[in-house]
Image 1 (tube, helix red, strand yellow):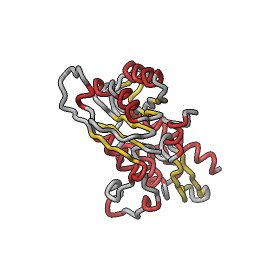
Image 2 (cartoon, helix red, strand yellow; image 1 turned 135 degrees about the vertical axis):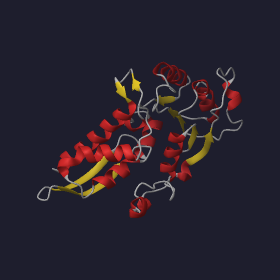
Image 3 (cartoon, helix red, strand yellow; image 1 turned 30 degrees about the horizontal axis):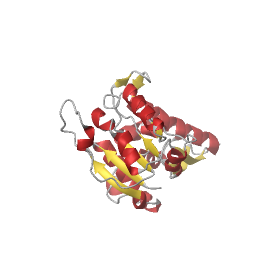
Image 4 (spheres, helix red, strand yellow; image 1 turned 90 degrees about the vertical axis):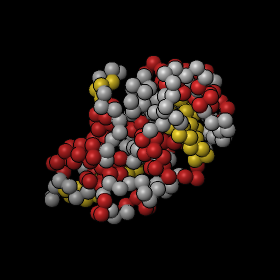
Length: 249
């Protein structure tokens, strides 16, 4: 798989840092770091292009391709993260130009990527024979049956999947392992905080870790899901932990 990433803002930087597993990426544990991520692979070798796009744009962009890079490497998949709405409209042309088979447009702020806009871009991509998913939030992404999208999920990114071991006699988590990580990398931090914590307090532990990582999803109420996207991300990781706890039983 070859991956091109187009992004604006901090969320895109987090996704890239998690993908390449930079040694400066996770500083969540501070002086207590035990280097738990060192065993995790870096996927820097599959990234063919990283493009941070401008945010200081006119109120209306008539020719979005003018703000795109002139040369775009060939790739199999594009991540388009938190782009200006007018710039996002250029992604189908960019995808076709680069030979991409699929595009993922994560929605972590519906003010930047309204549902109607995402659907419009998705339809345009699919009309060109390019697969597309618009997960809201990014950590909601699951296997879809679309080859290019599933290849990304199978790398270990999308809806969190964990393996957990419990000591019920002492009421504690004794082992936490990340099998599939939220694209921003928060699953590792949540798993770290769960280990050796009290089973009965798992909801509070997850919530505290998820917020202090921190999750960068919007706190604005999203009309489609009827809640904030940040809260939706919190529900996703909690459910993932609960499923792992059931399997541990």
